[in-house]
Length: 207
Image (cartoon, rainbow, N blue to C red; front, side):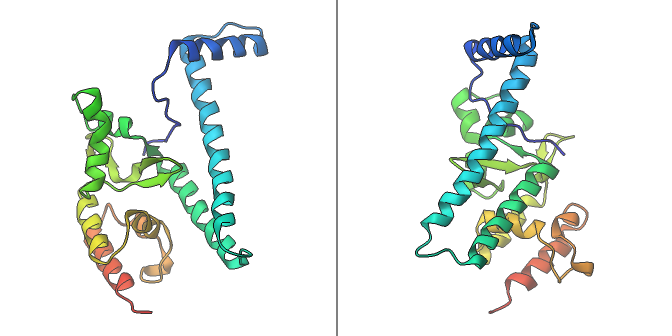
């Protein structure tokens, strides 16, 4: 599985040059453009993580009145799952999805490819801050394609009124509908039909 990285919308030479100068001053050594680019991406990733943590706090503040401890724990638990997804499978930005799938379209078409696939249920996405990202576990990186279970799983989720983000979270959470309260994500590639059946039973329970 791929590891996600913070996205540089368009790496400008001056941004790379600025990072090279910072590194030169800090280390006393000259660095290459490639090394500066890696450092710049790492810096952006650190900022993104801190911003996500701050955003979590903002969302809790938006809740009316005093935030109940249960709501705070639930919000943190959800954030922990997203972090686990990023750590274990990586996440792809729209441009990375287009590159993986071998798009040779115009820049505008490349930017819209993942978004169009998301809207029609051919890809699963989560909105992190102000952009959609695409968890890496739904891709076949060896063949540059989307896993065959993704579209039918998205369709099933829609039938039960589940949004894509909730459906993604469900895959990564242990469920008693599986032996030893395992996670559906650990079975989805090998036996998607079994996972679909478990989802139907779990989602069909009336509370």
